[in-house]
Image (cartoon, helix red, strand yellow):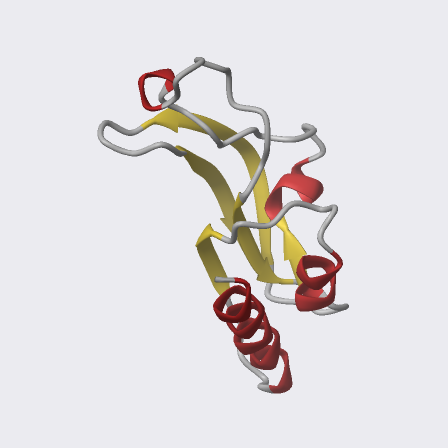
Length: 113
């Protein structure tokens, strides 16, 4: 539901108030078009896809068998988000098929200094 989605993004956003470093991966059900997603990132969290400079990594839908009319992945709603000043940096990202789900997994390589 929309209320649960909004609350989840608010909860993630509240992590910025702590002086900790985060690496968060998952299905955010959000694209860059969602202002709430951009607000959640604020000025302390960054999206790995944006930082990698490789363009979008479409993660949904992944299994054409789930759809009445098969379509290729068209939106990036799965993300890897991390703390801006954490010493982490993303190398390359790729999507891979995971059996039994309608999302592609987003995998990344990281450097930690």
